[in-house]
Structures are given as C-alpha cells and as structure tokens.
Image 1 (cartoon, one colour):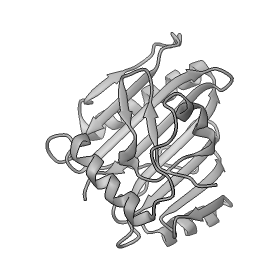
Image 2 (tube, one colour):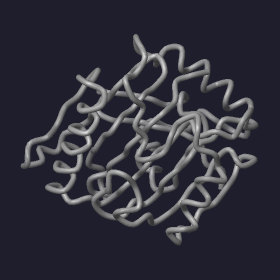
Image 3 (cartoon, one colour):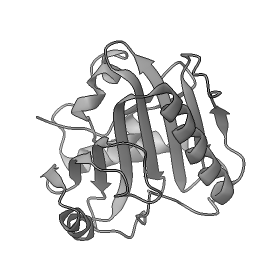
Length: 217
C-alpha cells in the first residue's frame, strides 16, 4: 500500500500536512480519518518533493535553528544505506518504497533511538531527498500509550528540545494527570521543523507522534 509523509497534530493547535511530503503510516489512519482523504495520490517522488518545497514556504519560521536534533540521525547527511545498516544491526524489519525515498520500520524496541523512547514504536519512517538520497524527514508513531507514560514522555521530549533549541514556537504540556486534551511542543525555523504531540483517539488510546524535518529546499 502507498505510504505518504503526512502529519496531523490534532485539536487545532498545530497542523503540518503536505509539507511532510510522502508518508502515510498505517497506524496513523485514525488520525488521517479526522481530516479526510490524504492530499497525495499517485504522484512520483519528485512531484511529492516539489509539493513539500511549496508547503515549506508557509511553514518555516524565522532564523536558523541552533541545532537540528532528529533522534540521533543527521538531517541532510544520513543516507538510506546508513539507515538500513542501522536497522539491520538492530534486527528491525523495514520496507522501502517510492524509489528508495521512503523507508518504514515497524515495531522498533525501546532503546533503539537516541534518546531512548518509552515503549515500542509502532512505525518509524525515514524520508529521503530525491536528488541525493539524504534524510530530510523522520517520523515516529506510537499508539495505545499509557496516560502517565505519555505525559512523562512528552515532558521529556520537550525538555530535550528546549535544551537544544530554546523556547518553543508553541506548546501545551499535560500534567501528570492526563486531562484528555491534545498536548504538543512545536518548533519552526527557517531550516528545521520539529513537532511532538499526543492525543487520545477512540479505540486507539493515546497516540504519540514525533516529527523532525529539514526545512531546506
């Protein structure tokens, strides 16, 4: 099945959709159902990349990021071959598509990423730039996360991002007692976008998503 980079951070607090270009994670279908059909059909990787560049024009923020954290990977430097080697060393099962511009790994165990994520990651997706095969998008998705763990994980992610990037462009963090409302932390720079979110979905529990995106054309 066709997968496309798509992020919807719910509740009206942050939306990043077409800019993510070409990822449609199967575990994210409940999120996508909230917003209707995905905007990308059977376009080629190059057409999707062109759409990503257009969308980035409205998503970028001012100034360059002081750092561009991406869970231990280097945006615009890491190659698909290097990601495959990393995945193989950890015994991960990954599927390549879109002419090797999209690599999706399932059931990623805790400790595989830096910093270590609490609980198994349902899907970890890497998007690579067409012209040189370098990493430009990284997204994680976890479903059915315990409320206390979700609040703790989001707070930990926010703290780590604050340390490297300073104050967020927007954020709403839950207390230890999850209040059921969507929570998030979001950064926008001229060369980098990062968003971590958590929201509760019927039948899925709390869904957590992380995204790290190069905003360079």
